[in-house]
Length: 415
Image (cartoon, rainbow, N blue to C red; front, side, top):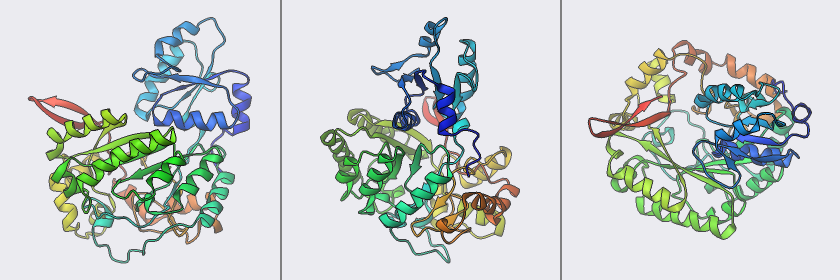
């Protein structure tokens, strides 16, 4: 069973008849909004310093609550904001585990289900864009297997607000994806998807199922986009962004869309502005992140001396922080692995991986046959986890950064 001390029953007992305010009106906030409302909590709105809306209050609203019955606060902000939010809540008389909890206190498992092990692109920064010996053939998860996996996850994890239905492949390729989304959200669990948006045959039906959060990856405009999203075309991507907006409007879907803009040396100028303007015009979030190569090849290089594929070295030369920079940064900032709780990672055929960022190291051929507690033990004891931590590689693939202007030029620095 899940090791969190909280269950739905204990949370109901703690909150009582109080309203809930969710601190953070981003994608995490809406995941909690959907989950809590499904389970009969009184969710009155959000607190957010930058977002606007009819039910979104600024942090100053907290001061007006002094001397009144306090609502219960769920902190749904990004991890590096949580400490400051806690201090603010305490300043206004809110007590931890009495008047507020963070998302991390409520659940500590972030499962990933790979509904498609096939991709339509061969990006040079991704495992699927380079040859790897012994790679398992990809495929599509069936709805029948998905239902069984969902039932077991829901029984083993006390509080399960969302599922990520993607890993190595392109999820929109699976024709049963709309049914998977509708089934999952009908059980009160939000769906998060990530897509390259170069395949749109299922897009209309996917949006009609109204996934909570859709991440769209982008690496520039024009030729720059096509170099990094190898096999895709800028015109197809741009047209499908407009198509996505139309699908959302026609279906009156509540899906939040975020364009994850992968920042390289060459796309911080005109490309950056082009995509940012496009995102604003379409009403989508624009989130610049630091581009990386997926860490499995780096792990193999550091641990076993295996050469890094030529395509990934080509990508490295275009990155703000090269592969060598990534290794040095990770080894200098060792600590808790940022992906250790993104678990279990269940592939399209039901097998289980120890890490969502690596294709290898399978720890069970079938998730349905092994308890989650046993899988967690196998994860922590696996060669991948043990050697990754021993070599200080657990901070590879760190994408968080902030845009700064240095000597009149836009750049991005790691956080």
